[in-house]
Image (cartoon, rainbow over all chains, first blue to last red; front, top):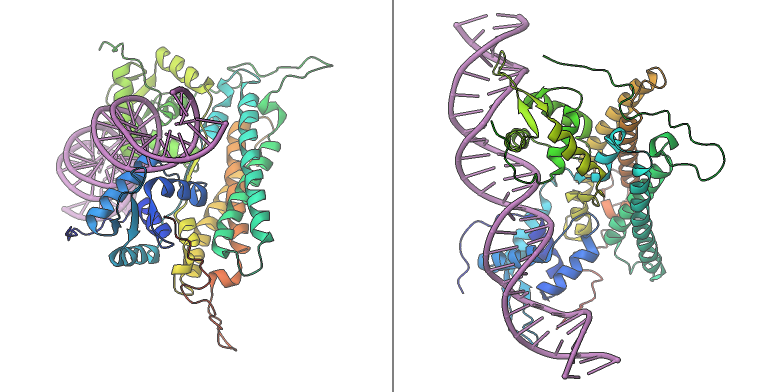
Length: 207
Length: 207
DNA sequence: CCGCACATGTAAGACGTTACATGATTGT
DNA sequence: ACAATCATGTAACGTCTTACATGTGCGG
C-alpha cells in the first residue's frame, strides 16, 4: 500500500478525526460517536463524511486501516504523516465561525406569520435548548467531580462554551417582547391584536 | 416566459431573498447587500448564490425579471406564486441551527499546540468579535433612537441576538483559564511549563 | 429466533465558496 | 484618461446531507 504523494488537502472535519485518533485506533463507527460527543455541538459530522474522509486519508497515508474484526469492524490508526499533517493544520489560523440559525430567519420575517405561530416555534426551540443546556450541565458536574488536574481543561473550555451558548439563547428567548411572539392570552381581557398582517409598511418602490 | 410546473424546492437562502423582495423589486447586487446587512450575522449569503437562486426562482415563476437598466441592472420582483411559496416555507417548522466554529476545534486540541499559540489565536478572534459587537451596539443605538413603534421589532430581536452572541463569546474568552491559553509571562519568574505534550493521557485503547 | 443496535459503505444531489471573466458608469 | 465601484454572470470545486443497500452479532 504505497501512500500517494498527493498534497493532503486540509479539511477541518478530517483533521478532527485525526485529532481523536491520537488517543488510539478507532473504527469509523466509533469515530462518529466520539465526534458527536466531543465536537458535535459546534461542528456537525455525519457518518457518511467520516467513512469518506477515512478512505481519503488512508489513500493519502495519514491513517492506516487494521484487520477487519468481528462485525467487519475496521480500526484505523493514525500514522506519523498523519500526526504531522494534523499539527500543521492545527497551527494554522482558524477561520471565523459560521452560524446558520433558521429560527432567526423566521423571527426576522415574523410579521408575515399569523399571531401565535412564532410563539409556537420559539417554544419548540426552547425545549431543545433546555435539553442541550441540561446535558451540558450534567457533563460539567461529572467533569468537575473528577480529581483536580485530571480533567482535560481543553475539553472543559469547549463544554463551557456550549453551556454559555445555550444559556444565552434561552435568555434571549425569554427577553423576546410579547408583542412579537403574539401569544394569545388564556384568560381575561381579549387581546388587542392591533397588528394587521400588512400594517405600517411603507411602499418603498425602487426604480 | 412560461413558469414551469416544477415543485419549488424550498431553500432557506432563496426564501430569504423572497422575504426581502416583499418590500419591492431589487437587483441581485442590492439583494446581496441587503442580505449581508439583515441576516449576514446568522445566515451567510454569497453573491454567487444570489444570482443562481434568482435565476432558479425566475425559472420557477417565483420572481420576475424586469427590464435591464443603466448598468445592466436587472430588477427582480416577487410574484404571487413567490409570495405563496414564501409563506408556506415561513410557516414550516424551522430546523435547528448549525454552528461551525473552527477556533473551538483548535481549543479542544490545544494540548497539541506549543505554548502561547492558542493565546494568539484567541486574541485575533477577540478583536473580530469586539468589532462585531461594537457594530451591533451602534446599530442598536440607531434603532432605539427612532420614534417608538417605528422601528421593526423583528429586526430588533435578531439584532439583539447578534449582540448577545458576541457578548457571550467575549465573556467566554475572558474566562478562559490562563494555563490553557499558556500566555508566556513577560517578566519575573520563568514559566513552569509543567505540561509536556503527552502528559496525563490515559492510554485508552479500544479493540 | 427475532428484532435491534452495530457496522460499513455508495449514490445522488443540494448547498456553498472561490476565482475568474466581462463590461458599464461614476468620480476625479 | 484612469481607477474604483457597480453589476452580472459562469466555472470549478469542495462539502454536507439524505437515502439507500447490505450484512453481522448480541440480547431477550
